[in-house]
Figure (cartoon, rainbow, N blue to C red):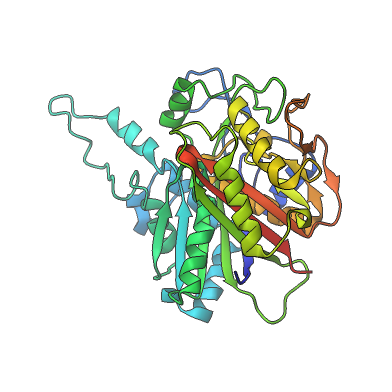
Length: 397
């Protein structure tokens, strides 16, 4: 495939608002997980909650979109000059030639949860100010993003669980390759809600402490929230050496089980193989792997088998979910931005909270940060239902 240029990108999560705070937290090996105090949730678990979301005010013209998810999206869009960069691209290409593709898993389901608390006691009807179309509806976040950025091109949402905002890079790339658009805003937004917290708890998948990916005593995930965005453009004739390129994309669906990965990591391996093939690279040319690394016993074991089958045990790798929590539909986008920072700053981030690596998982896992030149990185995002996506990013220089 022809590479694409991430001309601008931004991320907001529990470890920081925008690129500088995110980079500082990664450098300082500071995580954003804390005991859960979200809404009325009464669970002994840790979450990665983004500070300041409730204080965000939507523009009056977009008041119908008001929800935690869209407030988080707006908070993310206003970081790092991202909205201004999109406005400049809109002048260059035309607003109708820029697509918007956003990943989310639950969208603004919290708004529906809150509405249920205010059902009419006589009729059971939802409160009159509740709008499913502009909140809980998964398309809401793409529609909201498009309107905030004053874009008029194609827009869509991918909701394929935890691979959602990795797969949007593939959606945008296909649209651009077909000549339907010239550029695209891609990303992911997922926010805390009761459904995911109690739902994952019912599956026995959440940890009572900050998650410990690949640790011998790992026992589950920590749920987080995030908003991450990137502007994809064709590669110009001249590029700064620190420019970040999307080099390869791999997608697969093994459909092994609704909530458990294939035990040998079949779909994960297929996605990584396709990403390498589309990038025209060998496994030895990848300097770092940002693992999906959720910290559940089965997920980490399956991913290890898939990685070992292709890369052996030498390639440096880590999971950044020990810092941010698992941001579900936003994880692919958030970790794509972390990979971009790794390329630009030569920083391979440590996997936080992991104390003793599981000897049954033979990976070259980073327990401490490493600073070195990085040319190409791979980012894994694997979701429920066996939907998998791997992305390869490279530094132009």
